[in-house]
Amino acid sequence: MRYRWFAKEEDGKKEAKEGSGAFHSKMQPPKAEEKQKKKLMKHGERAGMALSIVVMLYAVLTEDWPLGFFCLSVATFMLRPLARAYGGRFGEPLSGLLQGFSLSLAFGTLIWVFL
Image 1 (cartoon, rainbow, N blue to C red):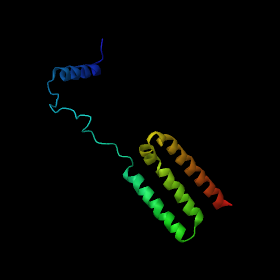
Image 2: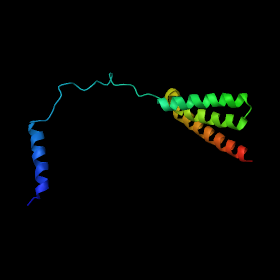
Image 3: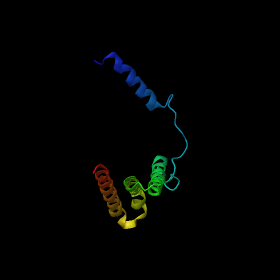
């Protein structure tokens, strides 16, 4: 014996199967060529890279070297998707190289600041 609250779900499933009240579009799904290309970088990532480059230039002009190196590490970390996309068969290793370089540069900069 079924409980009463399951009866409504079964009725809804029957109506959807029969097609009464269910909306079906006659539009064809898009072809593979018509699908939008996946963007390499989002707007926030582009803004972050531009901001890190601007702050890095300011740091170089004011001779604040630790800030300049930290901004350089952020900018190289943001270049990973571009290296992966345009690096060809060396895209993945180049992306890993950029990641390791940027993390070690950021860690070294933090040590430089606190010494």
